[in-house]
Image (cartoon, rainbow, N blue to C red; front, side):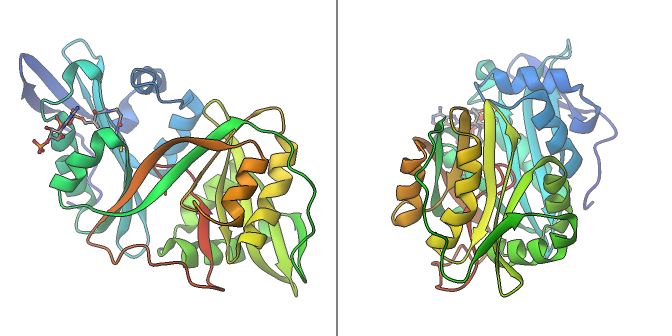
Length: 300
Ligand SMILES: CC(C)(COP(=O)(O)OP(=O)(O)OC[C@H]1O[C@@H](n2cnc3c(N)ncnc32)[C@H](O)[C@@H]1OP(=O)(O)O)[C@@H](O)C(=O)NCCC(=O)NCCS
């Protein structure tokens, strides 16, 4: 049933292990935190707390309560969802755990279009489930350096985001993302600093920045041109100079990527954006807003 929460324990026998599936909302944060640290993911307990506010999922636990698997899904508008936080503990990998969890969360989510960002370890699993590769996402991070000052794009002014900007931001984000996700954006705004680019009284680009993992992450960033995207990211990069900063982007060529290098951000890893049942991320169109940086790999 759509959106049904796992209330009764589901038992999975795997090799010599008997695993119990539990609603992720019932699992203590410190257990989830230890689980993601086990595969060297940088999430803090607070990052898990945020994900639990905006998504649902399951955890597989062994007989003594140790987590060995997790998977989440994040509902958006227009029957779309992203899937993320798919992790199998190293000792139980390649036994079919992740496939079982994927089947479970997709059934829980009901008929939808699904999107995700696949690590190289997970790519084959998602391909075998019918997901199609759409784009490469570049995870850029480093201790940031202060970028040089630059002129604002013609006709543009920058200002901090205010609560009253929410409808305009949600609309811009939905155009770029391809599905509305106002509920997520509202929660991101609660924990982020935001910069908006305004022309003729209208917000045309924005960038949010918040604590995440080892430092701060900039995202989402929505803009229609490289110049506008650079303009909204620059104040965050200046603010975080000398500190650990991350930004995940699909822009590999052009001025925006070159600007990331000026901030000291280099590509640490790449993942593949994949979708099941969607029309795909089309080629960027001039003048149409697009996502220059994702909120996180799990949220898109
Ligand atoms: C990616 C990950 C979740 C896979 O979990 P898993 O429980 O080992 O996956 P499964 O056993 O269900 O395997 C699913 C498929 O991938 C294949 N596979 C799994 N690990 C593999 C490996 N190391 N090399 C080659 N194929 C592999 C399996 O053979 C299986 O293929 P099939 O469906 O064609 O038989 C796990 O490796 C992991 O947690 N990695 C670290 C975190 C991560 O990258 N998560 C993915 C986020 S998108």
